[in-house]
Amino acid sequence: MKPGRSGGLSPLTFWIAGAIVAADQATKALVRSRLPLHASETIISGVLDLTHVRNTGAAFGILSAMDFPYKAGAIALLATGALVAVGLFAAQLSPHQKLARVGLALILGGAVGNLIDRVTAGYVLDFVDVYWRDWHFWAFNVADAAITVGVGGMLLDLVLPRPHPAP
Image (cartoon, rainbow, N blue to C red; front, side, top):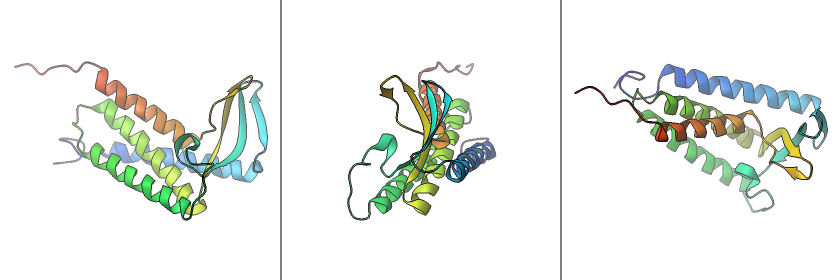
């Protein structure tokens, strides 16, 4: 099977994933260099702040409050396993599943971006803080946004009708 023609991972998958990793790591480097831990800068009053926080747990802060030996390593290992599974799934997609391919490229890029943080720092740096009055969404980053949009693309690919080839 040739990548991009009859299944497999296309070069576009790697370009999209690479762009996400680069954007994610660049924005995190900016936050680290310009915003002290737990400091906030208002972008849109009452709606959006940049807030430097560390997520030592998994997605949406799951396991953040829990502490156990080798937690960072265990979460990094779990994330690596999920990344491998997504890569294997992406390699099996039909070339006609363009939306799913883009979605998986976004997921791969986001997963790699966050995995870099987990392996190098033991936590993921989050900084986008969306809120309304007393309600706060979990802080997130570029990688998280790419994963979310990628999952949306995958779901759309599942529910949108596909053209049937002529007999």
